[in-house]
Image 1 (cartoon, one colour):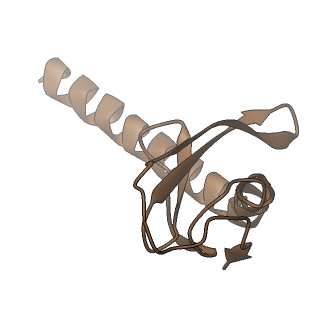
Image 2 (spheres, rainbow, N blue to C red; image 1 turned 180 degrees about the vertical axis):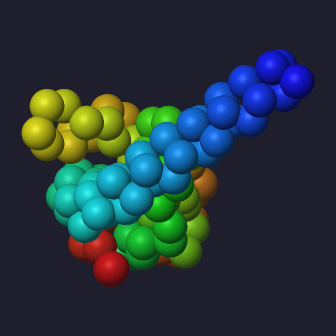
Length: 107
């Protein structure tokens, strides 16, 4: 009986922590997007980078962009009171008839 009660308390605590962290990070989504958006402005593409989604779990937090040809994954983490880009990974698919350059970011 004690094992079941302990398991229930631990499970409930973990669930509440996950929900609390999720809500706390969701309030920070505009700041996370802004950091990644400014980083994406410096990356060449075959068109404007179009925001797709933000993935909160598993960590690090990923913001996904596409330019109709390639996909970019901007990873951020908290550094004190602000968000910092740790890596930007993107596919390198070529397009023969497409101009490549800095076309900006579409929200």
